[in-house]
Length: 407
Image (cartoon, rainbow, N blue to C red):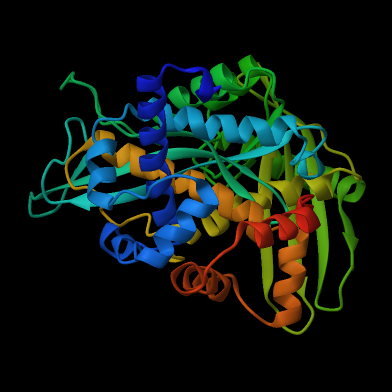
């Protein structure tokens, strides 16, 4: 397609691709900063890079200046193209629940400033009256039992220009995020999982309007009328709906559920409880969820499991991106909100690419057999690019052996 373009547009397209690829390299190789990335660009690394990708490698200051001008929608659309391709190729089908992708919703703080980094950045006022600006966002990530945590859509918190309005927050951002998901994935069946902030009418209405299922963490104090009904029905339903099983010598499990709890006369909710008791201690873990999926003795185990899978957006998602070389909270740019969004999207795309490699069956098996970690493999790959000469014929042979990737 690029070859059909006029020469001047072809040249600009290749230059744009070169800059975006260089930005991705910073996150794919987990360098953590622009300065550390520039250290990679030795002659040997650059030669290998050109042989592998057919693109030149600009310095990171060029990338930085470009990202200040690039509309954030362009990288968001690139991320969507990759996610849609995974869905289209059925890569994620084995991880669906009842035919639906499981999508976790959660917010995270990214940067903290003692000055306003961009217009509309939310802020907190301390006891001493000092303002601290907090740049944060709300994410929708596809989560899977194998550890996938793939960014689907992102919505940044940003105050409106109306000074009379309250500051932006997670609940407000969810309405905008849900609209983006519906616009960009109109026919994808979803089950949303989220924490105890979300059992509220706006969320229920949004899911009903979009035909989405949901499984939400449900803490004491949320929806008091529902909890009153649960507490009154529990003794009556316990004999019929409580069940136990032991699948491991380390712990035993039991579940309990109550169906048909009406909320505001328009939302039929279902409640379930999962308790894990450890055999070698008195320790117990209890998880409670509310859902719009009708419960029975067969599906309650699965619904509780996928509700607890919500933790993957924090563990395999945000925590990995903050600590394992991606440096999510590193300020790649200080005051430019456009560049800030673009660096974030590059990180999400790079994390997606790395996950597709790291979580493949072949890589997981090889790592276990060799007693090595992903961190060591990443360092080995960097060292190979820096010190060895990579020949395309060798790459082609390896590709032919492993081109079908399984998860």
